[in-house]
Image 1 (cartoon, rainbow, N blue to C red):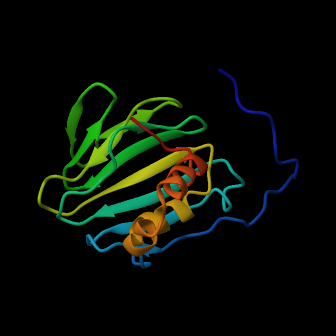
Image 2 (cartoon, one colour):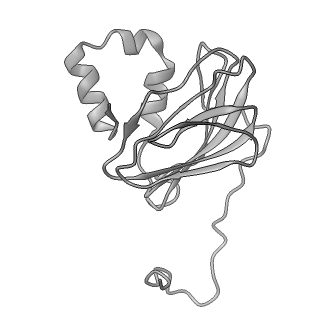
Length: 162
């Protein structure tokens, strides 16, 4: 394995870093007491990756088994217990546990602990996941979709349900 091709030709580097403070509010809240913080969107990273903090309230929540055709997804548990599905079995993941899912890998996650939980979601390459998170958080908007609109929405966001 070698380093990727050089993409920056400058000599001195640039002042282009940004900081999202730990106490910045989430970008999306949902009725279940959770939501998402957009730490580094695909737009902000030039498509290199997308990094999000996914917070879950104490009630059961999370998507069922699915896969992506165009991106990898990785999970890093920050707080609580998150049930992660690796395509073959459900695992109880705790702070510090990490799961990487290659392109095409079946996966899912759930919070069934009765306590809040939080994790990082990393997508590579970056994809515009923000609309996906916003629609999922807005139950009225989601429920207003017809079956065909819902299917189109999930396919547009590279979610293929099993």
